[in-house]
Image (cartoon, rainbow, N blue to C red):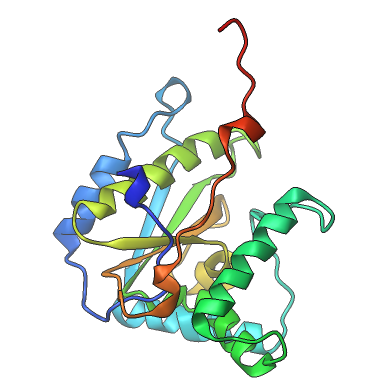
Length: 218
């Protein structure tokens, strides 16, 4: 199923049943964790609550309010291969969406989509406890995050892992009442993919094993 997983950036408005999300989350929680510590917590948002979050986050974005996320998912330098890969992905997305480099209005609208959870009917927040060391649970959280996204495929759902939804944690803490002793790590947009949405045609590239693997003793 991993070959079928891709980032979905355009969703249908159809609601997702709670019992389906329960099954997905129960599957995700079978992910491995260090000594079975299971350092993950979820907040699942939909309906009026998610819409209120969207509006408040976009307001912050448009006011150019400073961002103070609990966790920085983006940490690469501008002169690295990681930045080059990011730019290559953006170019493909903009080409599919018909957004030129000079079209600031369309580029701003595209940026805003991410802060709206790509208009998905459901948004999931992945949290951990601040009592844990800063990097400690990240491997476990990554495992549960990917397992969630793969499990969603079995129900015909798509996902997009995105940090835009958590860049203004103060909004989330206020609206969905997240206590200060919890760290907000990442957001996942989830819903039924709109396959007519141009960006959903993208399948991102992967490096070949020759570029990232050493074989020893074979």
